[in-house]
Image 1 (cartoon, rainbow, N blue to C red):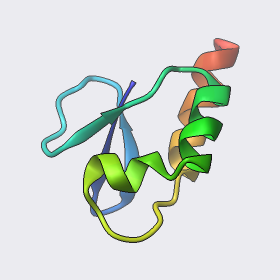
Image 2: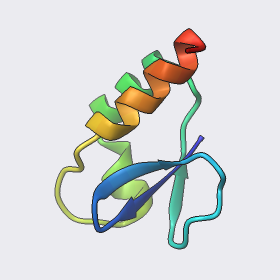
Image 3: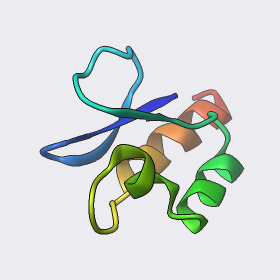
Amino acid sequence: MRLVVTGEGLVADERRRLPGRGAWVHRDPACLVKAERKRAFPRALRVSGPLDTSAVRGVVERLATGV
């Protein structure tokens, strides 16, 4: 799944159409947790400071459960 930073923060780009630099993560909650722990998103997206991943977490959990 592609993730991008918008004015609203870190969001899931499910259609892979949003402009800007993107970072990729598996649709697995464990992969998201590992990327957060390693602070991979600010580095991959070239932004300073921490990013709020709550919106992305909701999408990943929805996709993982198949709802």
